[in-house]
Image (tube, rainbow, N blue to C red; front, side, top):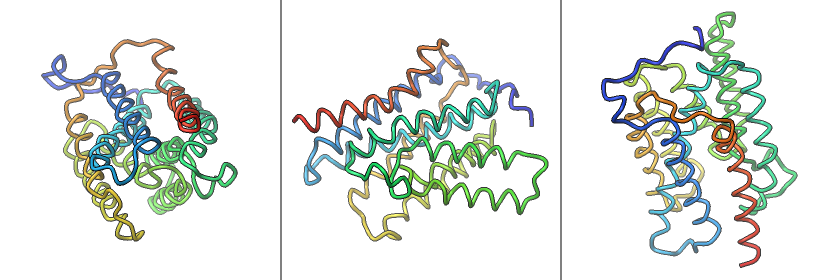
Length: 244
């Protein structure tokens, strides 16, 4: 499929949310979530509410990575940006959340999960690959993303939302299937800390359902601002957490 396929806009295009607005919501939710982790004690009564707000970020990010597959002018360059930001964010991420700096295989930031989701989508859409090769590649991407924030959940969301591009019903089914796996994770891994916060992912899809297909204002500053805000805010939070 041609990645430049034109998006079919809903009749309420002017009434919905554009891409920049949705990304800004995701950024605000992310900051709330990360501030909660760094500054708010786990036994504070409203922690689960604050973490629930933060759960909106990942599905929105995954959605726009999948959209980016169809709209980018250069897929290799697009794939190159994600690990570049991921490498820049690795040390701030692990410092901020108390992980080892050198053990990538134990913990790293979400950009690598988004990268492997994009790779999985590109392979799945590739016409020269057999079905078994595509399935093997998706499994490999899920395994490689395991140590990343949002791990294989992000990979599967990018894949599902990309495979069902322009099909909201299909995207909804893919989203719900992966969300069900996400809700089961704490029971598989043996922890249910702030479990109720996980249901915040459903608020994200309600927002995405009202995406009007418009990008919003375009500029290099806005484009790169969304990328580089991620490592910079983590570095700031780590510094503030150390000082305070």
